[in-house]
Length: 550
Ligand SMILES: [Zn+2]
Ligand SMILES: [Zn+2]
Image (cartoon, rainbow, N blue to C red; front, top):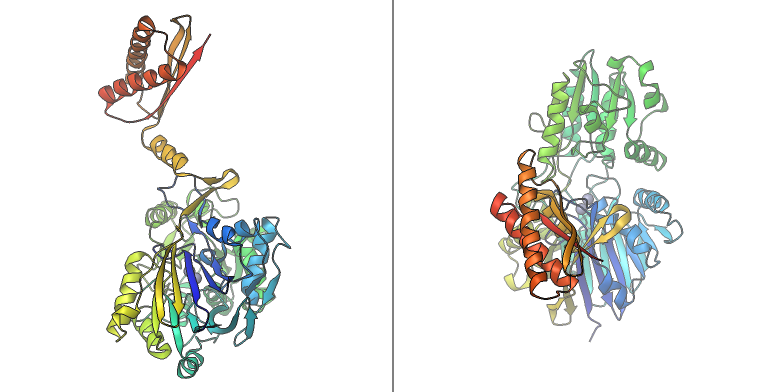
């Protein structure tokens, strides 16, 4: 009997973001990705959502982490975990460059030894013999991991598409996957489900380059501004190629864009001749018709360069009717309203706006059903667990696997916190470790559900505070009512007076009957104020009762 291998999913199954799994055998553990998720509008003040690592830390941590690629949903939680425990991180050169910067920014340099691996490398990591294969995605140097385990090969697809004409010529290594499948066989496949509910195949990144070049070529005499993900180096490469062909200078704008361009050029994944790269500080020296500004903000992020241009707050770029702004990305679900508002802001300033709804200036980095089907047919897995997706994507991917002839019992749809065990008898479920979310708010750190609930109430209806002083059985000051975000003047005054009167009546009645404790008085204040507020305004602001004695 060979040792069983457990996989515990700490995130990424049931959401797009915070991808993180633990592979474990013989009591030894390796982390596969350590990502974060961006918070939506329903999480006020939350910067990012991380996996909950308590179970992992309680189990004794990990021997190493494999970072499949440098997207935030795969490496964004590394600083948090590395602030608690130390471990080496394996990844490609570009991935490690991004991680090194992230750790430096968090003051954590040295907490992780960064160990570079490349295409085709075979490395023993913890208890596993890992083999790394190239994969095409919307960031350079993504890696598929084939884990050699006591229970055979566990193949993790990483985020992938099957681009046959990738910008860097580095294709997903299907032939090696086929060789593994035909040799030892793939015991368990874990594969990206992001686009599992979309028919067909994604367009090649190279096709987008041709469209972009055409759009830019038609902006004669105009300044061109391109918004893209700062990590989408191949997209930036294609914008740069078009710019160089047209005799335009590429000017990166925004900290992450400038930093990533520098890193990508230094590790050889981005090729722009020195003469064709400009500095934003010299923007005024260039003929506007001879530059292409590449910047962040294609997702409507509040602090990003394009957003600031749209609001007329950019330190560097004043947008006007001589500008064409190209959004070279789709809004991520949840960002649509923010992106629309940025586009409108630019249009108001006279700019011409080009986006992916009009011309094909974007393609996804995640394979659609046809591409997933190819992976299944080449890898011929014995067992399959769809990963990386919202729940409906996981279900769609599971359906696809069954449609392709997999035994329905050999396809397991799992969710965050689930633990599965691969043994001699096959794959089985082994309960859940929780899969909770960790809500991070800048310097404040981890927020609980109580604080988040409070913030939602405050955001919806504001608050009403009632302060009352009590001494020797009578009210000595107040009740004073202070509110914010509840109702407008002039109605406010009457509402506040009514709350004060109701509270006074309630407190006086209680004091006349007996000598109530302060907590009892606080409860009475809350009740009287809450009732009056609800009756008069049909709203539910947060009631903050303050009772002082003496
Ligand atoms: Zn990715
Ligand atoms: Zn991802």
